[in-house]
Image (cartoon, rainbow, N blue to C red):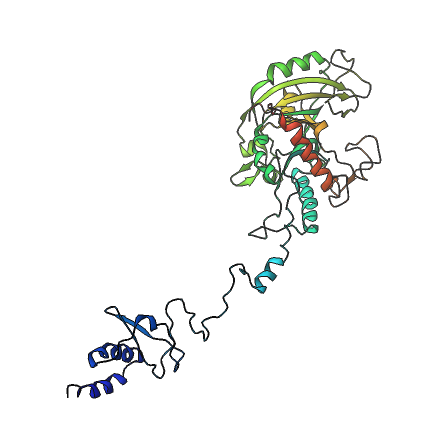
Length: 440
């Protein structure tokens, strides 16, 4: 009996995995005289199990009986785990399920509101008594309130930073009025060239006294008084202006300015009683392109007119020689960036043999922006009189006598007028190749 060893071997194999038992048993069946099954019968399912086992070896196919615990298998094109070989298949056109179809039918989220309705440059007419940063703050307040009402996205990484980018292209003193170039959004990137570019001013020069601030600020104290009776010739004034104050000149900045010395702003040191001599402020080079005498007034005059014309009480021009001492006259200045008109007026007074103070200042041009291109400011305070200057009874003053305008009150500056000004400047002023900046 040659098969005496099969019994012990099967006992050992039963203790192993089902897959090992099946493979080993199938390997030894031919050696023990097992029946050969035709290949055509390998696809017939066993009537005793859900599984069908086939094994190809030496071009012979064998059918193995099922074992308890064997996982159902399938080969060929049969569907795994299917009881019916004719099971209906999923059509190729059915590429989405009902849940997928529901997701496709969902509406897309609405497009978020833009933070800026318009971005670019424009110019405003700075109100009397406002700092340049007051103007920027007013514009930013209006734009941010509108953006919040529209539920515009807030992309700030730090909450302390301003929500919207708004800036200006050159500081104007609080007592000065006129053109102030501003930028919104991407327009702020172009403001740097306006800081150093050419500007034009119309200034009122008052002879006879000089203040600490070199202007008509009520906080300024009179520090020097000199007679001016000898100043009676317009021709003499014109000669001084042309011979000493045109081209490149040396100028000492005023103490009351935003320049810094040892990390502190000069006006902070000036409030402590420091003078230019105490601080040893060094002169610096500035450039004056044009300087012209445009009129005078023996009494009291005003600076006005979009084109820079001078209005005088008693009317006189530089072609007419006055018959009395000249206390006030008006000059037009076109200069480069960094020029202080207050310092220029101070130096003109000294050149005329007396002292002088700048009592009015209006910027008439900044780059290619003129007064007629600027968004005017009007409020209930300024609408009560014809003369919109510091002597107007409608202008409010605080306890120190400084001009005060409530920046929270409604005015003609709105989001609509700001956006319209940006579009107008983009479509007209900024299309010219000449940006009006001589020394940018």
